[in-house]
Image (cartoon, rainbow, N blue to C red; front, side, top):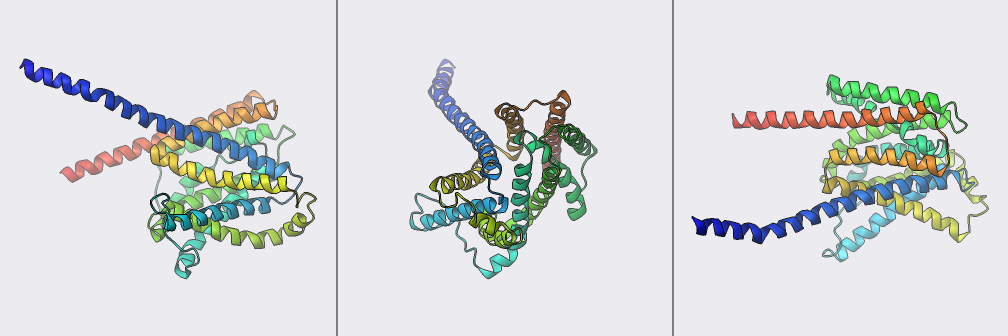
Length: 346
């Protein structure tokens, strides 16, 4: 008996440090990825705001086009390197110029183009501090469109969370309208951005099977097709002449900051996917909500904006509504999973 206990103790002491080390490594990696997501996401918003509002260049679609062109170029380079050095770089194989692929993916790419265009147009006209509230109706549109397009009903608890989000959005718009930074067109673009993001999320699930569930491959295709779709939009919006007449067009620093914006656009897609991979979609949503709170505080301090108590209340209401919605959906998914498991056992 003593010998058995002794062996058990030796086994525990032998492997315990290793388990602790592995657990520490795992949590360190998760913390590093979450931190990278926060830094890159917040940095991308500020960089985009500077590009869209600080360059004295009234060509938001051109700025967005250059970002998707940069992302598609990086994906193309990674695809080529992945074929030549598969042991070093892994990138799913695919050809965006395949006719069948184009036919199946381009409808989603149209939504992708609308989503990033409206998001950047919203950011151009509204302040960074108000940006989150201005685009906070994504969850509400998800519930509405999921019912209209897929016929899936949402629980009353989740609907109450949506009511909370709408209330926070309404209070935020009302309070922002009292400030000099308020932009009605920017707010409208924020609502359209939320709508297009919801549609994009729904149709992404339908399109992923056509690319073997490869998220990176779908991102590659979307950026390539979007780079083409933006060209007629820029022409119609009169941005080609605006860019050609831009006084700093041939300055190296201009293309330098534009490239930084493009790399940030690619990086945010990478770290978002990585955060979901090392954590979970639920943790990603929680992290995104907390990041939005930090982003609002940082923006208010950076731009030295003085906001009213009700303005801050609107942010808290939207954040709480989003957090509660995420929690309600997580509990419902766990319950559905347990019911499926119990029915299989029976």
